[in-house]
Image 1: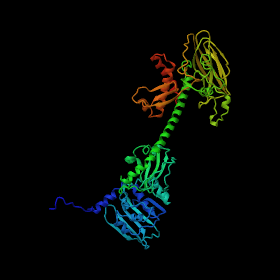
Image 2: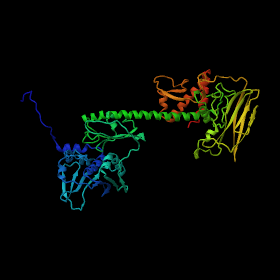
Image 3: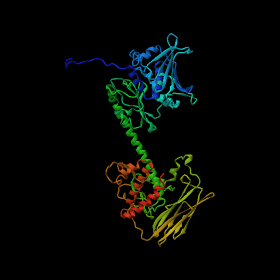
Image 4: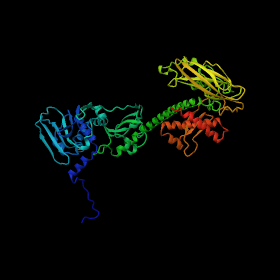
Length: 615
């Protein structure tokens, strides 16, 4: 009995060689990866042309790989040196365009078919073939009596496994285009797929990224070797991934599968491209993973500056997209309110106050809302000039200068078509007795563009008292009587054979309540009425959804509110939600002394006319 302090040592040995070979052969779980391995063997052999044939012979499906490389010089060495590739020795001698190193690639045919037959011409000019059978430890080498007559190798796997028969030529083409992208580019090899089943010939082209190439990335320094990065801002975020490669061969299609890289920007689906790290150690069996050793840790440290730069780039892009989205949302909300105010009394509603130092810009902004064509600004509702020399008015009463409009050359599609729709602005209004109200004919084509010229107008009072001035032009002015009444104004528009009519309602009252100019009246500087912008503020856990910042003239939206998060799942739902927040702030600003019931009634009224026009 040996003493207790003795230590027994030795070397590890394989107890069952065939069992070890079987485990290695079955470790490859992707038949496409196996086909790529055969093509890589051809590239390592210096082939310039590789042909992959997918066909059927005597009811057996087969896959054939033919190349014009240097061929196999010693079949016996290949069969008896599993795990000891001759390519490893070639790499030690300076070979840089060789990928294989484990000597187990040939065994991956087990995941493709039952038998593998390899034919090649030796250095002595004799053509030999070697046959391997799945699950059988034997191999057979023999001279062939067939005419080969060329340099290169021919590999046939037959019959193909039942589950592999669905691998069409397109699938093989797409996989190889990504898997061997850089190897194809650097070696110049031409890979052709002959798919007899579909009677098609497919050429494997290296995959090209469609995004915008990212320049000026930080310099990467790694003690284990050089890194190559080719990264793009993706056009289609759904499919955008960054692949990990080793010497031009893809190791991982998505680097975020590694725990360290399962974070932005690698899993953001906004960056695509590849990272080539030739010094990483692959997992020999599957070759779709890396060993997390010291070289991998150094790789992670070296890539950190690039990660920070990409996150900064994505943040800038995200902010720009949010700003653009906000502008688009604001434009759509503005259009919706613009259409709503064509139907609502301007005396009851006005835009929230918005400061501006350029009255002419304010006038042009209002003109965009109404489409008026005179080079002046009309006074506020009720016919009285406002206290800011015409820079403050109700919605829709700013009128552009037609000379300025003529300076802009319109495209063909911007010219209006024939008359299709007619409205009166405002469609409803409230006046005091004896006051005057200017009305405007709004003529549009089918696409909603303003129709100008070539139209004759006729205004008249269909019901009620009062008088009209300018009954044959775009503008008419209603003069209220000295007694309260409800008047219906009708308008006829004729363009060629097209005749349209529209009507507006004017309520004349003797006890019209004069309300204040609004929330922005006390702000210094020039004031105009306009829809304010909006911004976001994260206030998680707080119940408020929006607030109007009078000083900045913006509506602050709580984007951490549960309702905003829910609405943001769909663009149209988010648009409706923001529109309702604008309506809420508008109602609160215009009816500060209203009861809860009145505010709710106004909300229903405003959202009804606004949401109908959301597009």
